[in-house]
Image 1: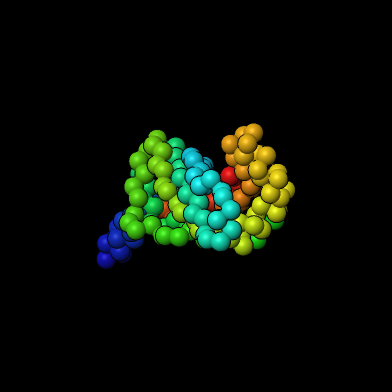
Image 2: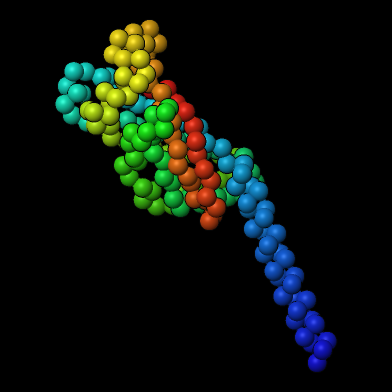
Length: 167
């Protein structure tokens, strides 16, 4: 009887060890997911933008450098000023899980709505109207810095995102 119990305990330990190693391997591979902004789309700012909200579209890219498939079940990113004040929240959550295959980059479009007050505050914090205008004329961007913070949930692991972009 003792041998039977010993065999069952050994089988359970082997099963738990294999499952634990699989989770450890998945966790290690989750650290190999890299996040960057592929593109930013902000409409050309005009005087009417002081009256109505402006939609900022960011294509968030996720590259899987591991040998494991990952399913993203949640993505939550908010936009902040460089000083840390919340500017805009992501308009739509993920509608369905996204599959990321090994050694593949996937882009996810995210939309943020900037209220007129927020837009004015951002422009002021980044040097004012003249600085934003001259940046746009010389470089094609407004020179407005945003900090994107949030997380991605992949295979049950939460992975933090913290990146600074210039619009």
